Length: 279
Image (cartoon, rainbow, N blue to C red):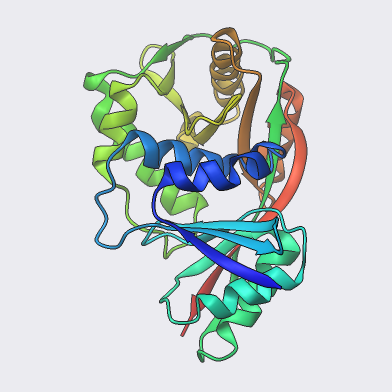
């Protein structure tokens, strides 16, 4: 029998499902990163997060997290029937969409939308990449540095530009407090060539790694190697600090960025899709 368990805290959730997630750390880097944020920062949303574990008997076969107003995020699935069970269990929630492994996210979207009158629409097709050794690209002029408080305006402008350019149009607006926190924690890096020319953020720790994103270079400064140098430098800094892995997500509709990251040493792991529920 397949059953859904709701956990009351992130510590309870990780106590139950941490081993399941860590066994496939790259595939679950988004879920693990969300757990790190929930553990380290008080939740301030209007609705509490949903921390869900799906079991077939005693075996965990699927976990999921919803942090409103964002999509439900699915883990890898070890029993395909668990997707339908979870979709039915969440039928009363007003979900904006779902993000997860390609086939399973599509199956959840179809099942959840069927009785609601909503319509599943593919918002973005992405690929998870993992890096453990940096291959240094040609180094352009300039240097890598961490962003500071004086960079706040340009960082907010560039991250908002990234959101408009790279993410679905219904993505929640940028929380400027998150930018302030990442700057304070030293997680936002700039390639500086007589002023900032490219940005990369490292955040959302996993047990042995960290995720990079967003990565952004203003249109007029692209094609000069700034983003490659910035991402390579940020990745090396994380490995030098003792982490084993660096993860990132790429938009499959952008072959240029996919090629750039693989040149640096990122290896493809898993395709994931984000669906929106329209109507």
